[in-house]
Length: 468
Image (cartoon, rainbow, N blue to C red; front, side, top):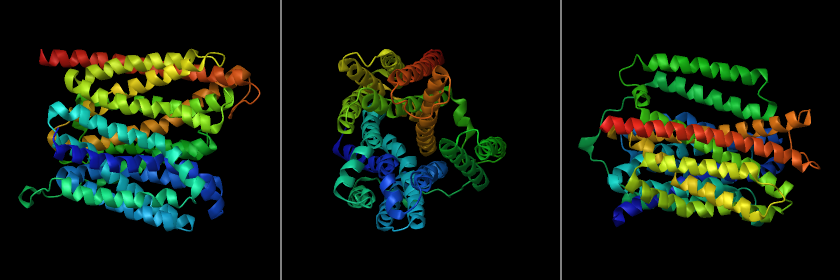
C-alpha cells in the first residue's frame, strides 16, 4: 500500500468516524439538551432519531449520484454540509433550529456513508482491499462505541453545544485534506445524470415510515395503532417500489443486485451481525452496573475492552481476508461469534470477572474477523460500487436500530414470562430475574449467528461450484 492510498483511506476513515460518532454521542447529551431547551424527553429523542432517519432515507440517492458523477465529489460535498450543519447545531438555541440542522447533518453524513467504501475499493488493488476496508471499519465502529465516552468528557467540562462544535475543526481539516488526496474525475469522463425520482421518493418514504414506526414503537409500544399503520404503510410502499423498479430502464436501485447470492447473503449476514452487536450495548451495561454493582466509571472502563480489542482484530481480519477470502474469514468469525454468545449466555454473577472479559475478547475478535464489507463490495460491479456501499450502510443502520428493539423486547419478554407479570425496566432487588432474561436473549443471539453460519457455508459451497 503506497502513501497515496494510505492517505485516501485515512481521509475517508476520519469522516466515517465523525459520521458514526454523531449517531451515539447525542444520546448521552439528550437529558441536558432537554433541560436547557425546556422540552420533554420524548421530543428531545427526535434530535437523535432525525439524524439517522435522514441518513437512511437518502443513502441510495447519493450512492447512485456517486456512481454517475464522482464518489469523491459527493463525499467532499457531504463532508462540507456535515461540518457546516454541525456548526449550526452547536450555535442553535431552540428545538426547531436544532432539528433542521440535524437533518442537514444527516444528509451530509449520508453522502459520505454512501460513497466511502466505493472510494476505497476504487483506490486500492483487489489484493489490498481487505486491510483497507478493515482500517475504515475499525475507525467507523470506534465512532459508534466512543460516542458516549466523548460525550461524557465534553459534558464534564462544557455544555452540550460542544458535542457538535468539536466536529467543526476536524471536518474542516478532513475536507481540506481530501481536496489534496482524492482523484479528480476528468470532464470527458462525466456521465449524464439520470435519477429515477419516482422510485427514490417511494423508497425514501418507505424507509422514513419504517424508522418512524420503530422509534415511535420504542417510546409508546409496538401495539400502538399509529405504529402498526406505519409498518403497514411501509409494507405497501415496499410492494409499490418493487413494481415501479421493474418497469423503469434505469432504476434508483437495481433489483438485479439481489439476484447475486453473494451480495444478498452478505447484506443479510451484515444486518444480523449488527443486530447482535447492539445486544451487547443494551445488555452488558445493565449487567455490569446493576447486577455486578460496578460504578458507572468502572462500567465504562470494562466496556472499553470491546473497542480496544477490535482495533487490532479488524485490521488483522483485513489482512487475513486478503489471504484467504472474505467468505472463509466471515464463516470462521461467525463460529467465534457463536462461542462468544454462549459465554454470555451461561456466565453467572458469582463467576470470576475473567469469564466476562474472555467473552469480550472472543466477541471483539469475531467482530474484527467478520469481513462483511469486502463480501458486499466484491459482489457488485464496478459501476455499482456506490449503490452497493449505500445498501451496506443502510443495512448496518437497520441492524443497529432493530438490535435495540429486538434485544429489549426479548429481554423484557423473557423476564415478564418468568415473573408472571409485565416488566419493562431493570428488576431491582431481583438480579436473578435479569440474569435469566439476559441468558435467554443471548441464546437467541447464538441461534441468529448459527443461521448466519449456515448461510455462509451455503455461499462458500455455491462459490466453489460456480468456479469449479
